[in-house]
Length: 374
Image 1 (tube, one colour):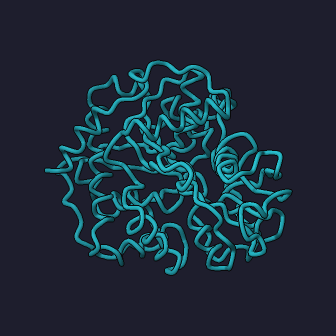
Image 2 (tube, one colour):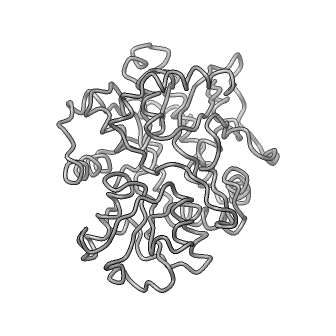
C-alpha cells in the first residue's frame, strides 16, 4: 500500500516545501554511521515509505485481538524517524488492535519538516510529530490540532567519551546535536545551563541524526552528544559515559504527540476513526505493560529496530519497568505541552499562538479511553 500512496505524498510535500522552511527536524537527518560505527543499527535508517507494520521477520504467533467484521478503513499515519518508543504502533498492527477497531493503519516515515508539511496538506490522516515542530507550525498559521500525547518526557541522554568524567569537563569541548538553534540543540543548552555551563562555555556542533551523532562521538568528532534509543544504550555498553538525562532537568516535556488537520476533523466519520485509532494505541500500550508479554516485546524491538536482544532488554527496562508512564497515549495533558511552549518562547522566540481551544482538543482521547475499556 505504501507504493500506491507514496508518489502522491512526496509530490504534495514538495509543493508544500514553503511550509517546511519554518520548521526544523528535531532529530536531524537520519544519516547512517560509517560501517562498523554501531553494532545496533536503529530503524531511523529505514527508507521513507517503508511500512513499519511489515516486520523484517514474521512476528511470533500470539493471541491477537479479534478484527471487527467488515472492511477495514485505511488510515495514513505519518511518523518521524523510527525508534523504540514506537512500540504501541507496532503492537497495534501486529497484535490486531487496529483491526479490532476496524482500521488498516499504514505507517509512512518522513523527516520532520516533510511530515508536518504532509499533514498540513492533507496527505496524512494522523501525524505522530515532535510537539515543538507542530507548535511552531501553528504559530505560522498551520491548521493542526493536537489530539493526544505520545511521549511526555524527552528520552535524551547526554553521552560523553570515557575520558569526560562530568559536565564540567565539557568546558571548551564539542557537543553534538541535531541543530544549533532548535531540537536537540535547544535541549542540550537547557541541560548544560542547569549544570552551570553557559553557551559560550562549549561548542555546540551540528552532527546530524541520532546514529550520525553516535558515529561522531565514536570518531572523536565531538566529546559528547545528545543520544536517544537505541544508540544511547549501545553507547553505554561500549563504555561511553551517560552524564545526564533530559528528564532529570525537565521532568514533564511533550516530546511527541498526535496531530490531525482541523479540516479533517470536520468530517464526522473521521472523528470516529480518530477515536478508534486512539483506542487501539491505548490497548497496545496496555499489552506492552503486561509482564507476560515481556519476551514478545523484546522480540518486537529486535525486529523493528534491527538491534540486539541485549539492547532490546534495556529498552524494555527503560520504557516498561523504570518509566512506565513515559508513553502517555491515553491522555492530553496540559503541563508537558506548556513546557514546550515556554521553552520555545525563551530559546527560539516563538510568536504568539492562537487560543488553545483552536489547536488542542482532548474530547477524542476521552472517548477513546471509554472505547478501550470495553
